[in-house]
Amino acid sequence: MAVEGFSVEVDNDPDRGGAAAVSGDGKGGGQAVTVTVAGDVDLAAADTLWSVLDEYVHAGAQVVVDCSRVAFLDSMGLRTLIRAQHKAGASGARLTLAAPSEAVLRVLQLAGVADLFVLDISGSGSGR
Image (cartoon, rainbow, N blue to C red):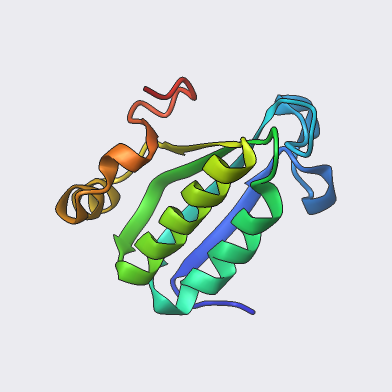
């Protein structure tokens, strides 16, 4: 289902047309898969984002969510990120929010949940 003003792409997954040679497939090899999110992450986009994150966040996975192109994040988008973080914690996966845009940082800070996440402000993949 297409959502106007929103896109989510998965890099490093050959099943989705990503370049597996860059970092691996994210499905058990211990290498990170990158989920790039762009546009408005709102009620209309939350289910789509969750379906992608739910697929990749599993035991031993390293998932990097590139948030550099997120223009807007509402409570449902935030709920989806928190849900993915809880799943990561429960399953032993590592979820990193990379290069969060000002819109993402502002919502995380206003909601008081920034400390729930591993944030990689620079987008280098290292996290804090």
